[in-house]
Amino acid sequence: MLTFLLNDDEIRLTECGASDTLLDFLRIGRRLTGTKEGCAEGDCGACTVLLGRLHEGRLVYEPVNACIRFLASCHGCHVVTVEQLRDPDGGLHAVQRAMVDHHASQCGFCTPGFVMALYGLWMTDPAADVTAIETALQGNLCRCTGYAPIVRAAQAVLAAGGQAGDRIERDRAAVTARLAAMQGARVEVARDGADRAILPADVDDLAAVLDDHPDATIVAGATDVGLWVTKALRPIAPAVFIGHLDGLKRIEVGGDHIRIGAGVTYTEAVPLIEAEFPEVSDYWHRIGGWQVRNMGTIGGNIANGSPIGETPPLMIALGARLVLRRGALRRELPLEDFFIAYGQQDIRPGEFVETIVLPRRGDARVAAYKISKRRSADISAVAAAFRIEVAGGVITAARVAFGGMAGTPRRAPAAEAALTGAPFSAASFAAAGAAVLDDFQPLDDWRASAAYRRAIARNFFRRLWLEQAGGDQPVRLARAAGD
Image (spheres, rainbow, N blue to C red):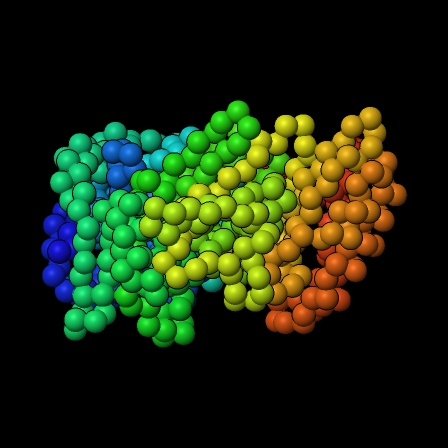
């Protein structure tokens, strides 16, 4: 039986299809129409709800996109919609009142999604500055007001405080206990018998399930699989949901290596990124919007094999190895070898990505960049990542990887060869920028032309040099004073 909390109610479902979405359940099944459908692809944020889940026994609330969140994945969670928000006297919640006071709503269609994203920020980061506010709103689009009044509303409600009196905070212990009682056993539900969703009890049970269902669709965060359903109308049953498995969410930092569970979300990886690879923090926070980063997983982004996924170029440049598991058997391979051709990965029936293993960086210099049509919450036209080692003014080792330049994420061997053994100088990076043109024959598509992609790839080496040389020449536009 599928069991979860929806606002104050406990929901128990004996029938649920693999591709049933949380949004449809809320709007059609429960008539909670404050949650809107805008894009149906996790891009606009109009469907934002707050999802509470247990992580290592701790209750964590995060904004997520209900349009691409499958209902089955809500087992053992607490779903909070905009209808639940109110102050202790039954009036508007402080976040809603701030939106009214600062004229931050016009047509109103997107407003509930903004409210829920700001509610999530208000609860989790009460000291958020403007940059943090804007980061939290990356996944919410507004066509009417512009964002300045929404940011002002956020600043006002954050300054006012009051989180301790909020009902989520007051009820945290009780909700934690109710969710804990829902954990622990395998859950299987279906619609019409065949449209089946399976939630394994743990990672070992996952291996057993995939042995029995080797052709099942594995669903982690659904930030891509969700679009298979909402846009392509593809069947995904039987679907095996893994986003709840704590055993796939562990990060272990050792003396020589870092081990990252395949189920670690982008948000859960932020402390690791900022501690070990702070140079790529900006790149990391441009992957999707906040809602997508709360759902999407590193392992899912890799396993999906998209040539424009942003995780693989960075992980390849860092020297990642992949641990694949089937049953009790595991095999390990360099991440770049996992990608065979467009849409084809080296994964066998019944296997799943279990762990990503990274060598510690040592003294290596690391960078990652992307170009997209929008700065935030947009798919890359081209992404690139670099790991270079320098000793005595000479580049002793270089790993360079690109996404969007070929049918798979790939290293750039000619560019790497041009850098390795060369002086650490502008001329060496210019030579590598020229050499990278021999590494790829990119395609023209609606995101970018082949010529534009080649120009971007070359210019990334110039940017890398400007950053690494430590000069005072700016490499990105800065916010003007007073903006």
